[in-house]
Image (cartoon, rainbow, N blue to C red; front, side, top):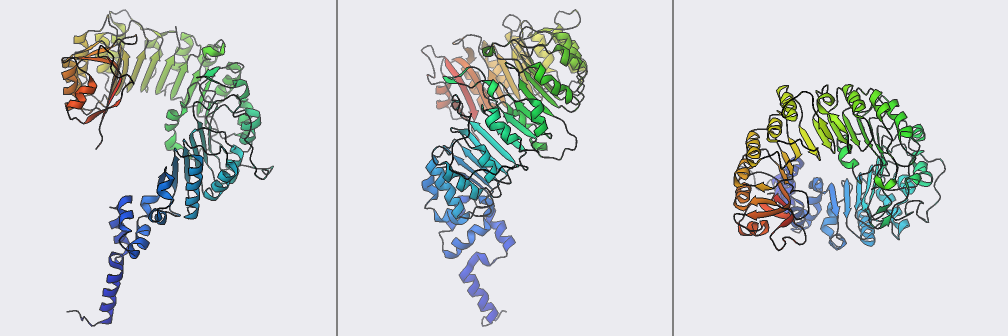
Length: 609
């Protein structure tokens, strides 16, 4: 028996009475607080002073990532402020005004959040009027900052000052709003009442720079790049091209394109270059492919990724030498021809690409870049490790049998606006070709064929269904050569396969039997059904069949660009309202259904638990 008069026992009881659960060993307390969420912590801090003082130190893991939006929640919330501190590593300010953002930054400073590594301003209007105050608060928060991001930003920024006050910065990302391309907006640095920058600055830690806007190369971009000897990833001037963007005039590319020889003399370690690109934000998807290897030590110099587009005064003469110089190291090459708005004739790449040898190339995209068929086939015959091929060149006749002959590693095939030819004399040479690929154990995981005339048949669909690795199929059906019965047989053939994503254009009619077959595809995640050409021409779909599909399937997303239900003649909106399912209507055009019950841009998504 224990002696109740033992001073040690009395001390333990008093300690337990005073501190309660916090007398337990630290490892046990940490295990307990792993089951708390933020709301649990804040509520438990109201129990007493002991809990108020101790809960924050055992719940630091919950406060490493902050998303701050409403100032009124944070400024008088003492419990929340007591939970944050030096353990906060990631902060995102989301859709707050300039004054609100500045006030929330000050709260972080007052709470000693000086170890932040990632800071993002998302749709915030900072640097609009109170530039100096913003820079001062960023200076205090940016001591350990390695990643700084401005997403959907509305105002011009002083990039040199940002880099100067964040000495450890590795990533700087600036993505403006699409309506921010006012003529001349980015030609000069905004005025700030800051001390003059040192003359011999060097941003040696900067590895990734993305300025997704039309920035004057001589006055703004070049002074930055001259100070970035270790830069490896560069994205700039990748907004939508053309004279107008909506109603906003876009500056000329003559002010934004840089001499690549000069660029590589300043940044000899560049691995990834995306410049003068035609797709606003197109690099983001591409860059994800590189995220796993980002910042890894690379001893061999040479460009790994090049994505660029022709424009006036910038074509084969400026681009080709760098493709040739980096031919042995390039993993990805994306070339885009000039936009129609530039009134620039595309330059012929046949001689350059038809004779080049790129042994490491994994991805090739040609979007409107002029090349002859025999030159493209010759190039592909030497790209034995190619995994992704995208060709969109209007009017090009391409013999696919010859083009893919040596591409045994190919995983993704995307073709658009081509006229395809095949070897041999057969009733359906395309079906014969894909049957042969399937028999040889093709590694194709994705096929996308768009605006390819007179190719799609029931037999070709069946041949594609036999491809052993196929996961994604996006094709345009031929109304004269594809039958309803053939389509149903094709879907039945996919049962038990790895297919996850299906998209069919030029659909006319979806009977109940087709929906039932689709419901058997256990791995299917996305289904997109696009109506025949011409606005207002719907896909006719069996309403009961659609509901049976939604009751049965695990599909995450189902999309129609235009649909009219029959059996019963109703709307998707009404049917989903009447029957409780795991799905909800997440997107529908403003006018929903017209007077003849057509619904437009219908997107149905599975409700997450």
